[in-house]
Amino acid sequence: MRDVAVIGVDMTQFGRYEDKSIEELAVTPVIGALKDAGIQWKAVEAAYVGHEYQGLAAGQRILAGVGASGIPITNIENACSAGATAFREAYLMIALGMYDIVLALGCEKMDRGLIQQLPDDTWRTLGTDLIPSQFALIARWHMEKYGTTREQFAKVAVKAHRNGVLNPYAQYRKEETVEEVLDSRMISDPITLLMCCPTGDGAAAAILCSMEKAGQFTTNPVKVAASALNSMIYTEGIGTQNFGSCIPSAQSIITVSAREAYEQAGLGPEDLDVVELHDAFATSELIHYEELDLCKAGEGGRLIDEGAVDLGGRIPVNPSGGLLAKGHPLGATGVAQIVEIVWQLRGVCGDRQVEGAKVGLAEVAGTAGVNATHILTR
Image (cartoon, rainbow, N blue to C red; front, side):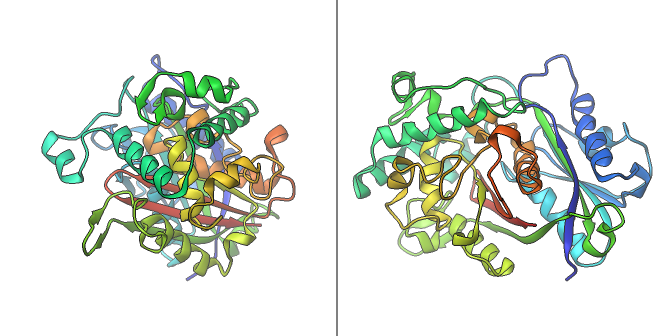
């Protein structure tokens, strides 16, 4: 396996672009990432495009905007992990020696309101009719088992919106108080409206390159130190775990992916300087602290209370504002997390910069039990 670097990144601000097609929206960060890498489109040997709802051959339609060069373009649907999976495929193709320079693109345009759902029979198979209810049950279980409070969950949303104010790429840039979060409309107890991520439109792109070739374009490449992808686990007596958070930490797909990534990178959670994780709901972020081994089981509430995950804290989480403030155009999210980590490791994030960041983790989970975790280093 060859070492792989990220040499160029870019993304759109997440939001609503009702006047733009997916082709117009998504080609912009591709051009930006090429410029950031200092290469032309003709240097790219393959492309992987993650999306959920963009229809037939979306990658081909989008990338026609930079040139019909005949390269292999692969479209990937993998729930919320689609973009992260596209990034992983690009990484693997370079690591295995198939290509030297590959594009990973994540993109999405979404309808307003709840995420477009699968047929009813499919959702019954997954064990839930509404995603917020699933996460509400997980939160209630955590509250009952560990004494976690609504206020602690609310503090996660407060942190996200505080960070989002500092991020020009965030969909929402307005601070919220604990009281405002708790008083917002109840969605599924204890989850309120301001504890839920918004849907929207957006795109993010990354140019990956073999480390040996990266020196031709940059003196400070960001290394992809680990890439892990896992899916649902069957546990005897419990059944198939779609999200993994209601069973012992060692069995969670999030923990499985994280520990696999730590092993690949030769690092541990104590070595992380910055984390971008999948906070589709404020409740899930707090539990992911534990599943990523940032703290012990049951100590997520203490971590948010102590400010350990704030900017300036021991392990800043979601300095971008996360999904709660930055937004969650499904297919774009995984690559956008990579973009933020690359920017953090380069030290170019301005007011939201994590000082001295050298090691970053990006983690994204998807419906039906998909999880991708990447570790990047300088």
